[in-house]
Image (cartoon, rainbow, N blue to C red):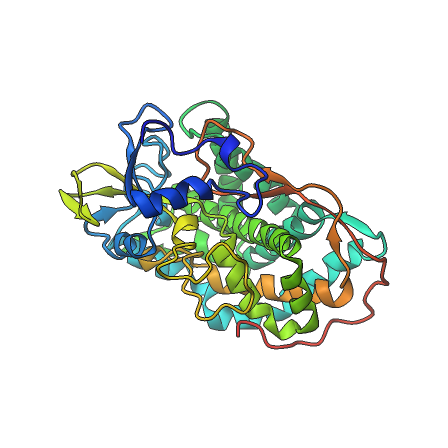
Length: 417
């Protein structure tokens, strides 16, 4: 390519291509599936990977394609100091023990036990809007859903997670973590984490952050620096993914009204609908790996040290894997999407995210069945100069017929089907 892969004018508010530059990505997928792009910073450039099979192959080979020192495009966007590592920016063998330690509260069995808590959060959120007849889906529904569930899981006050989400937004939108707003936001996040670490070391509780603060993995006790990195993974990823997925999924249902009507007629389709949202509207734009040796992808020579960037949105619309890939189809089966990534770095919180989404869609459509878009959705990102890691709606005005508050918790239908 002769220029940057990312260009905000090419993707903003162009249904059904909102959120990512699908038109350009899918052109590359057909004509140049391993394409060279200029860097967005002062780096040497990167290889853009857009086919489903190639993305899976890169994800499966952590010996050749490393997540260290960072999985973000900018070389300076590193969480850690070489001794302390983020689980996102690490490779086996250290990654293996760290991931096992971090995922204890989000295993399938743990998530099933947590379902009643999610039910209560969902009921509370809908009760807060149901009598008004209107809401902003992001600030009133998906934002609180992500923040409250993450806070309850971690054992923190909900107001703290809302504050942390604001900090995470500054981090994700900064482009650089080494200076300016990005560095300031990282310092603010580290300050919150250090305060919580010191509190739980002094006054342990029965919660996740206490386990982290007193934990040990890979033969080393968790200190304040490592706690801050592990804390960021939960507070940022737990907030961002669900928040953006729920809003983007509602946008897709509004863009494809026949699918929304189908779902309203049969709420048992919600698990399949969530999988299609993960395919069609996955909020994670890319992950980067770095070649550890000379190799090749799909016949293209890759030199040691070069950046390899996997674009999940393109992989999720690969016609070699998906029939009518640009069509949103809640009955799609099979659905081999990469909405949660693949390989060793498959999203740890996938089971919890699925549960949150399934319960919220079920209850929202059960209680407010005529909810619809009231105005144009505003999308992230707002900075055209960077390729964002995460995209999703920033504001989504909705309207519906007012309904009474709940008098009891909803019946517990199966989730995670």
